[in-house]
Amino acid sequence: MKSSVLTRYRVMAYVTAVMLLVLSTCMIFKYGFDMGEDVTFVVSQTHGVLYIIYLVFAFDLGSKARWPFGKLLWVLLSGTIPFAAFFVERKVVAEVKPLVGGAAPAPAKA
Image 1: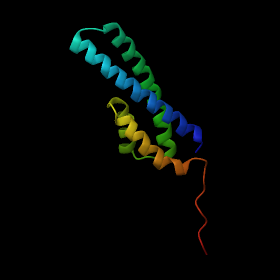
Image 2: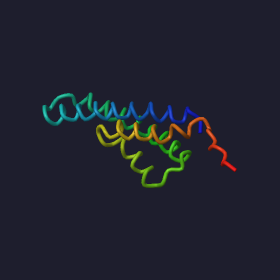
Image 3: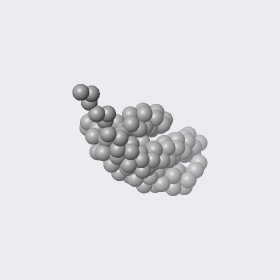
Image 4: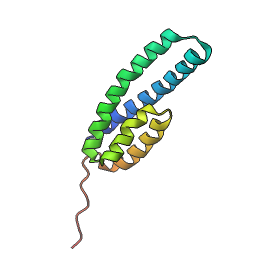
């Protein structure tokens, strides 16, 4: 697997996670303090577009890493839970890093 697949996923995981935190803050201001409705609209639309890009990149990584459906679903949904994407991204990188670069398994000893 190419390292660019993992890099694209990592960038979008962080961007999506940060945008979700910004969106959560905007929602608190919108519904808690009745202010920032226009900002909330822009942030929610931006997060939506970025989340779709995240889904594409996460699905690409999952298919190349041959994840089972449950794991893939958890990674895809982590972009909708505040703070979850940060933890899931670290775990995914730790698991996928050995697969990057097309490292072949060591030959069996005779």
